[in-house]
Image (cartoon, rainbow, N blue to C red; front, side):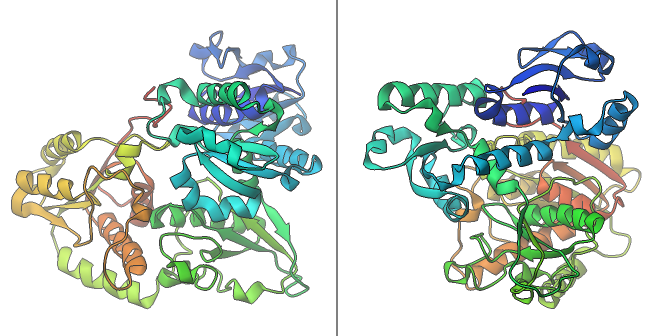
Amino acid sequence: MNYLVWGTGSDAKVFLSEQWQEFFIKNSILAFIDNNDKKIGKTFFYKKIINPSMINQYDFDKIIICSSYETEIKQQINNLNIQPKYVITKNDFYTEIYNKLLKNNFFSKKFLIIGDKKRFIQLEDIYKSLFDIVGCVDIHFLEEIKNYQYDSIILMNLMNIIDLNRANGSIKLEKELIKNLIKNYNINSKNIYTDAVFSIAKNIDKRISLGNKYPEKTFLVVQLQGTAGLASFIMNVASCFYYAKIKKYTLIVDMMTYKNQYLEEFEVGKINAWEKFFEQPAGYSINDIQNSKNIILVSRYINFENTTLSFLKLKPELQKKILEYNNTLFKENIKILGVLFRGSDYSNRKPYNHPIQPDLKTMVSKVKEKLSEWGGNTGFDFIYLCTEVEEAILRFQEEFHEKLYYYPQKRVSANCCEYLSSITFDRENDTYLRGADYFIALNALSKCDSLIAGMCTGTRLALKLNKNNYNHTYIFNLGKYGIDDI
């Protein structure tokens, strides 16, 4: 297949980095398309960047749109008299690849995972729901490969292994490991796959039927999974809610099928963690659709711009906790500057393709600057700090003394490198309190007069909860880990 790729921004860079080794060394990218005149004639992934008027000079099979401006680009392509059948989105691409994998009996193979074994253990049930996994070999102990019988290997998310040289980029990391496996372990290159196949298998829509009940309805079941926090899950549901509304599907949130940090081990498959905090968006639960005819299982959609939180209905207990805390913090004519500082596992692990966070010194400096700039004649009465980092509380106390407010939640050290989802506190009902405390703290942040924050899903959620009512906002835009820092 010969492709033209429309887009040369971060969306395209991530897409190509993830898919290159697996798919684009077997196909051909002819050129990249961009509307930015300053980029025309330059190269991107070793190919020329052209403007849209030059498209017809190329003998292509498909144009892949790799940009957040998908709707606008589709219209522009239509104006160029290019038929829609020649244009696909990233999701269309994933579907095509998934169908090819199905056709080639890919999912009947036995796979060995190579990567970060600790990370695999956290996601093991998700991997095993998609593939026949015989085990995982940590990248630091490759000699253990000989202990397994398998058909093929899947390389697991190398860019998130802390001690690998991220400056090499995902393409070089994968290439070097594949060379090693071929040379030192006599593995056929055709039997080595990258984590791209996992992303595609996980994110593809899966249609199932469990009976003949509700034939007039289609249920969109979003299966939340992995090590993400409650803010990430809520924003994911917001995207799915938007998609379901367009398609006239009935949305159900599933936080019981797979492990997550808000379930005890014995609750997996029995308790829906979403329902600990919120009501189901449309009133239907997983149990209600056991015999339903039309069910679509999804993992996620990414469309934060057009989303709302109108589906978010808090359980009475959580609503009560929020009201009690807000009544202690927000008084009439009180002006509060909200600050979100994300550190610990986030800034120490530098997760690939996630926004780069400011350090504590930079955050304190920015707060002092904006206190002066935004404060006006009366100034801010208080600073409300939302953070999981204990040292951040101490540093802000040193600087701002009695002006500092913060929610009394459990916190971790700035040096923490473990995923927060794997850290437990010795208290009754910890899995619930972990999520409830996080949401209460973010909700309070959304009630502040103004906001300073590093970009993360907690910030996105606070902005949505606030409904654009902040008088001032400053969101750090420092690029993304593994993309803009190498």
